[in-house]
Amino acid sequence: MTPYVLVVEDEDALATLLHYNLDKEGYRVGVAGDGEEALIMANERAPDLVILDWMLPKVSGIEVCRRLRGRAETRNVPIIMLTARGEETDRIRGLDTGADDYVVKPFSMVELTARVRAVLRRIRPGLADDRITVGDIVIDRVAHRVKRGGKEIHLGPTEFRLLDYLMQHPGRVFSREQLLDAVWGSDVYVEARTVDVHIGRLRKALNGTADGDPIRTVRSAGYSLDLDAA
Image (cartoon, rainbow, N blue to C red; front, side, top):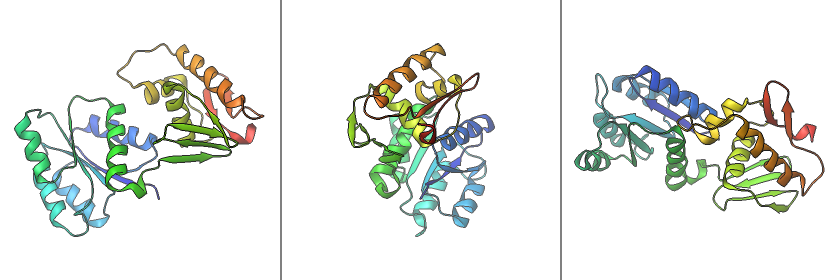
C-alpha cells in the first residue's frame, strides 16, 4: 500500500516543494496550511506519516503533535518536525512532545526524503519499500544490492540512486534536469551531461547480465526505464 504523507506547512512555496518531491518519491500527499486544518484532515483520514512545521497559524505545531498523540487513531503515526528552531532545548521539547525526528530549516529535499524513508522503515516497516521489482530487475535498498535475472549487479552509489528513482516510476520519461534534481538534489550544481555519463554506466552494468536494454532514450526528452522495450 502506498504511504499517505500529510504535510503541514504554512509557507506556500515550501509546501508546494514538499508536495512535489514527496509525490516524485511515490507517496500520496495531503497538504494543510495551518494546525486546525491539519487536525481536521488527520481526523478524516489517518496519515501514515506527518511532516509538521513548528510555527503554524491557529494551532501550533507542538499542539498539533500533542493532539495527534492523544488520539487513538493517530497515536502511533510517525511525525517529523520541520522548523527553523535549532536550539537544543527546542529539539528536546519537540521530541518530548512526541515527534519521531527533527529537521532544521534550511534543509535539502534529498535529506528529508531519506529521513521519511528511515522513519517509516524504523517505525512502520510494513510501509517502507525496501525492495522494488520491475520486470527482471530487483533492487534492495537495505542491503544496497541489485539483481537482474537472478544475477547480482554491482553499481556505484550514484548509479544505484539513479536506478532506484527510475524503478519507482517505470515507463515515465524524465529529462536530465529532473533526474539531476531527484538524484543529486536541487541544491547541488552538476552539469546536465553528467546524467548521460551515469546512464551509460548503469546501462553497461544492467546489460552485462541479460539481453535487452531496459533504459530507453527519448530524443530531446530524456530517459525512462522501460522493460517492455528491452
